[in-house]
Figure 1 (cartoon, rainbow, N blue to C red):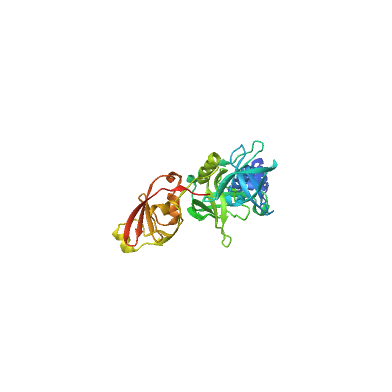
Figure 2: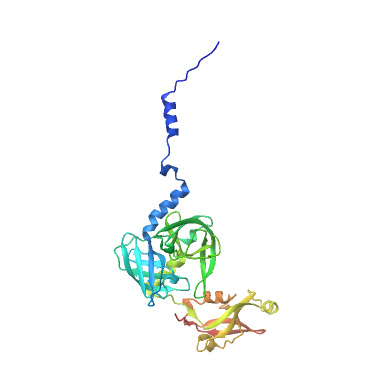
Length: 333
């Protein structure tokens, strides 16, 4: 005996089958990562500008920047605009504007421009103290002139130091693997909320995924100085120095807190150092009790607050520990 079966689909089953067969829309298919990147790109790209430079000899270059305030202040890298005689800014949907250099700080590789333009859309600024290693970041800029190129990656490391073109170390630098190329310099590094957390500044061309951005907290501090005064003032004493190891026996004898110091290679005539009695070959090991492990630390300790203030330097001269008073001056630009 044979049995025959017939199946009758209920309306609910047919509706379910129909829903399963429906091809999802692009928005539905887009994963969370893509949604974040596209949302950030759409919200931040209108604040990113292309900067074109020209010198008196006719040489030019280009880079990126972003609108810092709605009244026309634009933040970028010092190395993008340094030495330029003419500056032009290309803003999305607004066109081309002549730009004025308000000021630059080569020691942090930051510069501030201003354009006379209608009210601009300014980028939202974040807090670089809230950054965590591994979090998603998006870089936007104009590499090789390709407008509004977007790359994404993660924060690879925090607290890096990067040598600026002036020779000083830039502290609190963000390392990222978001791809950067020539022309990205000065553009924003943005978190998943569309807040600028860094200013893209450098890449190691021979490496893969080693890119760097100056923290936005550093940028905000420098920009405020440039808006108020047009310069960032730092003190100097007039020495050329290098980091050098200390004699272990001498360091132990004086209970020094560091194993290296700033070895003075040359002292510029007429400077505070030359007036204080310092000599070539001296090793600075402390400034007002703060250990000096080398020239980079000495640079960092010689801030604006030291200008015109008698400052105590602890020095090793051979096997002797000596102290000198020096009055730092404003560092020449």
